[in-house]
Image (cartoon, rainbow, N blue to C red; front, side, top):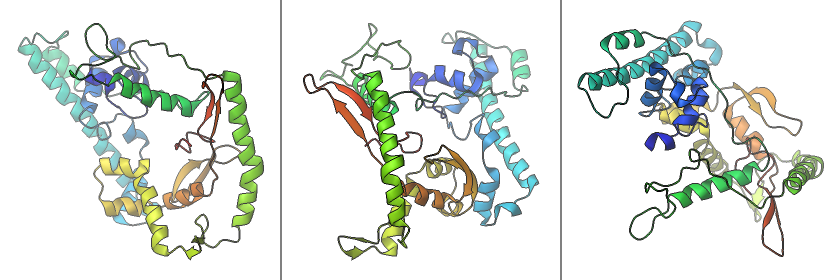
Amino acid sequence: MYLNQFDFLYNAVGIENAAKVYFNKRPDELTKSEAACLVGMVKNPSLYNPRSYQVKDYRGRIAAKKEIDRDKVSEQEVREAREKDSLLIHQRRNQVLMQWLKNSEKENGALTEKITREEYDQLKNEPIIVDYQVVDHKEGIAPYYRESLRKELTALFQSKDEKGEYIYKKKDGTPYDLYQDGLRIYTTINVELQQYAEEAVAHHLKEGLQPEFDKNNKRRKRFPFAENYNGIAISDEQVESIMNRARKGSERYTRMKDEGLSEKEIMASFNIKVPMTVFSWNGMTDTIMTPNDSIRYYKGFLRAGLISIEPQSGFIKAWVGGADISSFTYDH
C-alpha cells in the first residue's frame, strides 16, 4: 500500500505512475533492475532519481556553491558532478538488488520472485535506461477544480470513525485509492460552460485589465511592489520579506534543500541567470533570467477566479481558479 501512495516526483504518485513516468511500462512489465531502481528511490526520490541527474542544471549549482558566474564553471566540473550522481543512483539500485539476493538465499517466504547470485552479478552492471513520460494533471479542462477535488477525495478516503477504522473502505478493510481502484467520479461541472468560463477569464485579463495595469505601473519605481500601503511607504525590509517568502515557497528552494545544499548556497543561486520558460499572455516564452527576477516578473501579473453556481440546486457548473495552473497554482 505504501508504494501506491509514495511520491516518486515528476507527478509520479504511486508505483503504477512511477513505472509509466520513468520506464514507460506497467509495474508487471518492469525488469528486475528497473523494479530495484524504483524501490531504491523510496529512501530519497530526489537524491536517487534516475532522471534528475540527466537534466539537472549542474553548471548553475556549481556556480552558486562557488559564488562565481556560470561561464566560469568548466565542462569537466559539470561532467564529474553528473557522473557522481549517476554513480549514486546505480549504487542505490545495487543495494536493493543485494538485499533481494540475501532474502532469496534465506528462502524468505514473502518474496514472490527470487534472484540468483548469477542474476545479481549481471544486474548490478546493467545501465539504468530511462524512458521518461510526462504525466501532467495540469492539462485538460477544469484543472483547478480537478486539483481541488483530488485533495478533497484523498482526505475523505483517509478519514476514520471513532473506532479508528476507515469510513470509506474496501472489503479487506483498506481505504480506497484514488489512483489504483478504478473509481468513477461524477461531478456537476458543465463542460461547455467550463470552456466558456476559462476563455472569459483569460480574455478579461489579457485584453482588458492587464494592459491597463501594466500601463499604470510603468511610473512605479518599486514595481511590482506597491509604493505604499494605506498611505505608509513600503520599506526595503518589507520588500525583502515578501521576496524571501516567495523564494522559500518555490519548488527550486525545496528541491535544493532536499539535495543538501546550504541556505547560503540556495539563496546565492537565486541571483544567477538560468534558462527558463515563463508565462506570457502570448504563450510560454523561453528566456534567461535570475530566479529572483522571475519572482518579480510573476508578481506583475493580475490574478482572477470565477465560479458559476446553479441557484436552484447549488451545483457548481464552472470553476476557474486562475489563468494558468502551471504558472499560477493558487486557486482563487
